[in-house]
Length: 516
Image 1 (cartoon, rainbow, N blue to C red):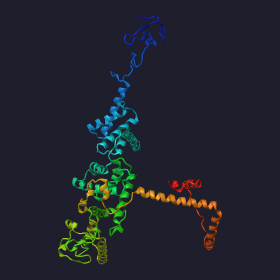
Image 2 (image 1 turned 180 degrees about the horizontal axis):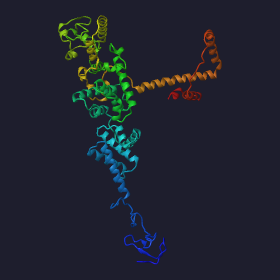
Image 3 (image 1 turned 180 degrees about the vertical axis):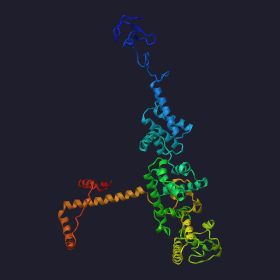
Image 4 (image 1 turned 45 degrees about the vertical axis):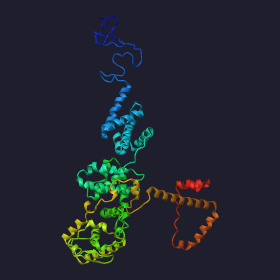
């Protein structure tokens, strides 16, 4: 149908109405005319739809409101995060119920909502006793552990929950069983390593190494030490990357573990030879000593040693790793505190009878005497004989780390999970104060010294005559020394803390308030 209006492009009167779009089109130049099909709409969001744009449309054939779209996207995000954290169906339902309770069914969008979902997941797992490291959750939701921790505190305070204590023993057991670094180990050996690690972790709890520290880094250090002790090739960096923790902190915890074991070894006769570099070689015997102490079989003087039938000389020479197959020709059995006689039966079979270990107690004095005697025999043997190639190979094999089945018994209660009260009651050969308390005492003493030094500087300024008198006396005493050698200028280090202390003292602030 032609209209009288002219075309905006060519000016001809050849406009027709399109049947589909109802727009005017010029039949001469085929140009669609602008602003000829405008339709005014009255109403809000629920008003009539326009020609091309429909309110609330999300794709062809869908008509969702803003709230429905937000809830849908939030549900997809929740399912994705919980799937990456390996949550079961009941746990997923519990997390969703917690989210609905806190947000009152409004959910949310943005980066904060993913952190909020991770915090709810952590709280649910922690509440149910299934430990989930916060570092794993932070890695999934792509945030910092501090930010996630603040969100966890807000969730706990809003719901008025009381979470159980963090179970570091359970974390160690779970990590050892599921870690790819220990997947190639036999099941029997892994169980032994499990008990050894639990023993060391609970010893670290007694030594307050875990107090105020992040538990995952402590677990990594114990795993690395147990792996090295049992000849498993694991690195701290690999374990740290598996648990999403920095390797630097793990090395610090590993160093603290070695230092604690060295301190325990000091009470042994050969403890002066132990340091951080060689503690791994001596660790089996140190842990044996700790295990005996924890079982209540402290080292006492030998009683009824003539009925034991145990070769102490062989035992100590084996522990000191100074024995080869032809080093000692005969073995002696312990018949008294000072007398050792030949025992032909033990010469034929010098192997240790660990079944009779509970029948005797050894005093440190006796161990020290036997150690000295063994060292004399070793030095005499080395001065009178030369080792052949075959003997060197045997000794090299003997100097390697002992297999875990040779020294580990696992009879101590610390090999199993105990309560904190029972752990603190156990004796593992050393009692130390918490590192934070020791550092606090050192800081307190340092602050006291700075206060006294500041008081002395203030007195020297307020009473220069006394300061000059003291300086004159020191000058008279040092005139002879100045002639021989020029006296260096005295350099006094005064930092910003010293200046603050001086300001507070000048305002007559009490010393206790200055220390605080």
